[in-house]
Length: 154
Image (cartoon, rainbow, N blue to C red):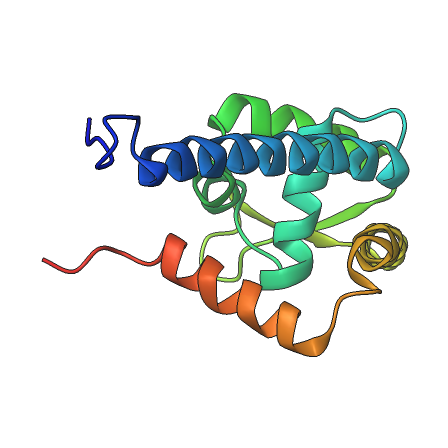
């Protein structure tokens, strides 16, 4: 640990601790927002279903195995959630053209509407937190977050 000229703890160390606290607060707030978003998407589904739906919304129809890999879930859990989402009318499925034994799943019209409404609601909450920020503050935060999340140089 570095010390300042007067022998006290380094202000850099204090700043790093404060940064860690703020990152933890951000992660906690993000988890809470994700839980609320998942409940808004569909109250009868586990939050992981919303992650599947968001992925399908962004990337389109895919095989269940590709979805499982993309969202970081095991295939069995993904398959169970996909079955439940299909039974609720949120997903459609069709045989793959090259291998009629496997399927491709995608959001149904209802599923797309539900994801869009949930993302809009999520955006409102995020906007409420930043609406009073200047464009310079937003641009600065974006720049700093990009630096924080980029791969370190070798």
